[in-house]
Structure formats: structure tokens, C-alpha cells
Length: 247
Image 1 (cartoon, rainbow, N blue to C red):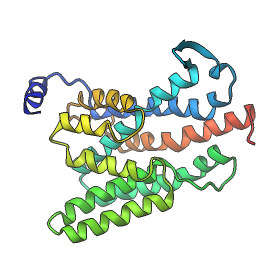
Image 2: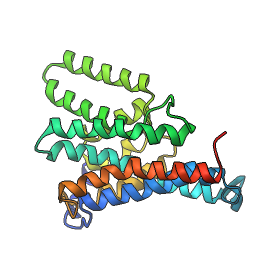
Image 3: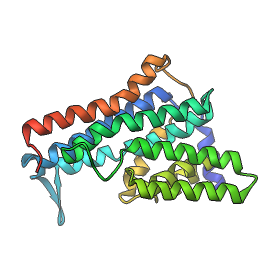
Image 4: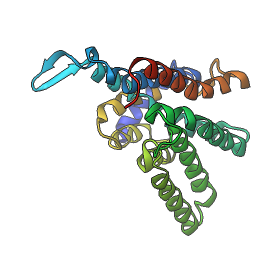
């Protein structure tokens, strides 16, 4: 492992992706994933085999969803970077919570066609993951308090049934704790979810991150990135409602 870490450090200067570039990759792949989940899943042409590999049929829907699996690990990584670089940790956490609440209406409509739905959107998972990092740092010298807080957060994620659930929360905390062990972070992190190859691929852009903020610098640009989540979900809901309807 130390040898791999040494090889990794040799390429420290070859990292072209800023935080803004990672955000755009995450946003685009997320939109692709949601197009697959909420539109192409209903379209017959998208579920017809393009090619068969053994007993597995490859469809457009399958391809789109696999591309979309790249988004969540990158968003989780960005949460850890947000914690490390924000000047106001309370404000950062509050922003995540506000957009989690804002996103609930379009999320519920997209999933059920109604204002109520049993699961919660992924912003809640990101918010709880951020709180887990805060608890870890605040109480790391008092293991009893730290584990009590973390247990409470994990329990809350289960009760809320937030997207990616407790596993997503644990993934965010893991990324933060292993932030200085990039090779181990990628290897172990790839085991958190089914379809691990997509997580492995997601660690490629993550490890091309150069530590710079990039072109998303103003508050307007920052919040536009946040607003893109509930906005695109609502647009997809309208498209699905007028094209396929809801059962």
C-alpha cells in the first residue's frame, strides 16, 4: 500500500480538475441518471436490447443508469471538501438543510405524482453526512459522545429513508476520515455499494482534483448549482406527467 501511495504522489502535479469541474461532472451525470430513472424507464425503445453479452442484455436504460452512478460518490467527496474549506460551517450545513427541504416537493412529485412520498431526497443524506463529519471532529477526543452522535445520525437516516440511506452517510464519513489515504480510500470506498465498478470509475475524477475552487466562485453561482437539483427534478416530473403520466 505504501508503494502505491508513493506512485500516486508522483502524479500530484497532473491533476486538471478543480472543485467546479467536479461539480459539473456530478451534476451532468446525476441529470443523466434521473433521465434514465424517471423517463427512459417508461420508454419501450430504451428498454430494448442494443447488444447482448452472454445472458445480459445491454439497453439504453442500462447504459444511462450506469453513467449516472458516478454522481453520488463525487457529491459525497464534495461534501468533505466543503467541510474542510468553508469559512462558516454552520451556514454551510444550514444551506444543505434548506435545499433538502426545498427539494422535497419536486422529489415527492417525481416519485409518486403526489406531494407525499415515503422516501427523502439525497440532500438529506448529504446533510446528515455533513453532520456526521462535524460530530466526528467535535467529539473525536470523547468516543462516547462521538459514537452516540453518530449512532443517532445513522438511526435518523434509516427513519427518514433518505436516498442512499445509512450507507451513503457512512460513505461520506469514510471519505472524510480517509482523506489523506487516497489509494485506500478508493479501494475500500468501492465496496460500499453494489455495482462497485461505477464507484471505482468515480474515484478517477475525484483523484484528479487539484484542490482549487475553479470557476464557481460567486454566491450566485454556488446557489445556482444547488438550485439545479430541485429544478431539474421538477422539469422531469412535468415531462413524465405529460408524456407517460403516473400510475
